[in-house]
Image (cartoon, rainbow, N blue to C red; front, side, top):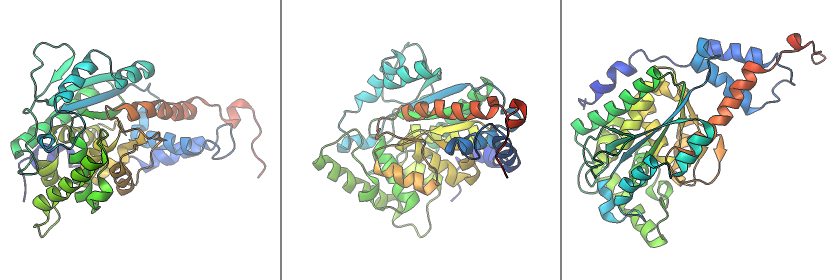
Amino acid sequence: MTLPSAKAIESITQGLEPPSELWRSRAQARLDTLTKPLGSLGQLEDLAAHVVSIRQERSLEKIKKGVYVFAADHGITAEGVSAYPREVTYQMVLNFLAEGAAINVLVKLHHVELRVIDVGVDADFEDVAGLLRHKVCRGTRNMLHEDAMTDDELTRALSVGINMADDAFRAGQTMIAIGEMGIGNTTSASAITCTLTGAAPAEATGRGTGVNPEAHARKRAIVEVIVAKHFAKSSTDPSPLDILRCVGGLEIAAMTGMVLAAARHKLVIIVDGFISTAAAALATAIAPTVRGYMIAGHQSEEPGHRLLLSHLKLTPLLTLDMRLGEGTGAVLAMPIVESAVALYTQMATFASAGVSGAAQ
């Protein structure tokens, strides 16, 4: 069926252009003239050409980076799927704002602008400074028993992400990362992964925040019931918006909207871990063109993340056995992308340096 939430993204997906293959070929031609053996920078050359295909005539502009951390709670936490209580979502948002989390350390080190967005935390932040307040509601419903969101809630969450991408563009950011905070959201991402890829819950469901073996087994069983409840009776594949509404999270919906709108603005999108890659996969299911704007920052320890990266045919820049979220892996990857672009733009050519080329 056609959902009203489709109208929230229709204007974005219509006319969405893929990265330019002409600019990619121009970039490769220049890379082949730089003072190095052909192809000797390996994946950095592909990465530079990829960024040029996205940025096109703006490729020489200084890179300005931002990371957007969307926070929301999940009703499924009532089933004991996380090692941490639901209140930790609220507490970690306060930690972000107090600059005490891993993401705070990394954004300072790598000169990235951090934005923390409350899209659905089950708490009142009152007058806490620095938080972007876009609360849709106080968390999703328990998807084991009912749909996680209403269509109105889904539409509003998508719109939050769309507006954040518009803000990033207006702020002159050229490279953005999407991150999240939400106790219980690996269960949501696992259900999304099973539905998008056809993987079994045992393949797609990891330990999340570090649950013990007994809780992990229960989590896998819960994901299996959730997927069967919402999608097994359907004679057709569910739409990505149906998936989001039934088993998604408010922060996942916001990230999905941000990916779609960021591609419209031709921003380089660095995807973080399991949950943000679930959002990226949903955005790609909505509009396949957006995949061309993505770079996978890293591959996490979550088994579902490997499945999603394979599904999207994205090669991660880093593999560090992380499972934190917050946008940390994506921000760690940003200097690698910057390095690739700097080599492309700043190295001398054989002609300009007066260096003899290789013998033909």
